[in-house]
Amino acid sequence: MRDRSRKSEPLVTRANAMLKLASFKPIEWAPGALEAVRGFPKAVRIGIGRALQFAQAGSKHPATKVLKGFAGASVLEIVEDHDRATYRAVYTVRFKDAVYVLHAFQKKSKRAIATPRREIDLIKERLRWAEQSQRNS
Image 1 (cartoon, rainbow, N blue to C red):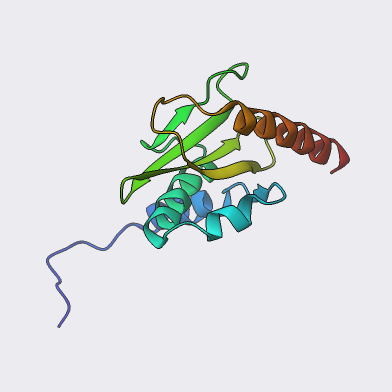
Image 2 (tube, rainbow, N blue to C red):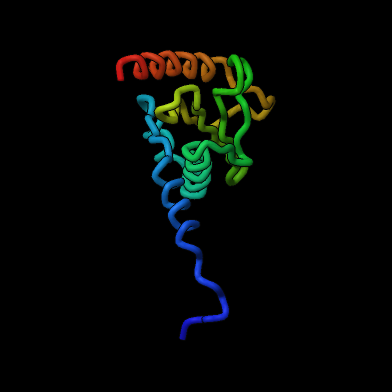
């Protein structure tokens, strides 16, 4: 039996929710990034997926922070901890047409919080790839 004490949701509210879903930006994956995420534990994949949904909707998930070393706040990093390991996914919202996932990796170093130099270099290379992809589209 249906609970009739709750009022049904107004049609306008449902339409706004559907419109919001329709306005999600697509995700573009840099070469190798999707394969890296697929190799992460399931709980980490779910967390990264949820944070990317926030990005698609134009919002910022609590597990997301600005990646230092890049101009402005357009390159962000999702940080997920699981089973005493840290996993990261880096994306950019620099472009209005899509969210570009640039890189995903398991952080190996236990000594420092900083992202390793080789990972930063790869992120910069993939950011150039995203800029080129954006120009060609």
